[in-house]
Length: 52
Image 1 (cartoon, one colour):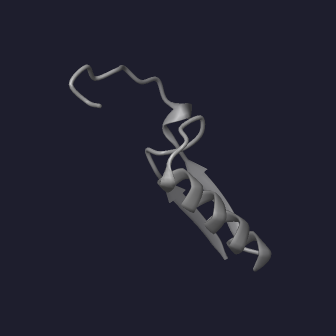
Image 2 (cartoon, helix red, strand yellow):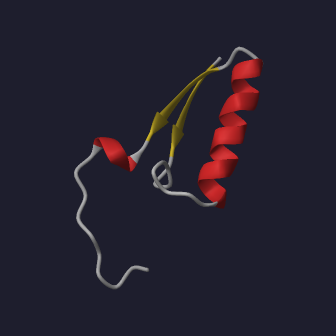
C-alpha cells in the first residue's frame, strides 16, 4: 500500500502534530506501507505576521 500524507506541520517544527505524524510513519513502515510526505518545506513560503 502507498500513502501520501499532506501536512503543513513538519520538521523543523516541534509540536504534537509533528510527533504524532512521526510515530504514525514508524508504525506504518513496520507494516510495509510506502509512505511519503508532502510538506511545506518543499515550497517557498512567506511569514504571516498575524499568525502566531
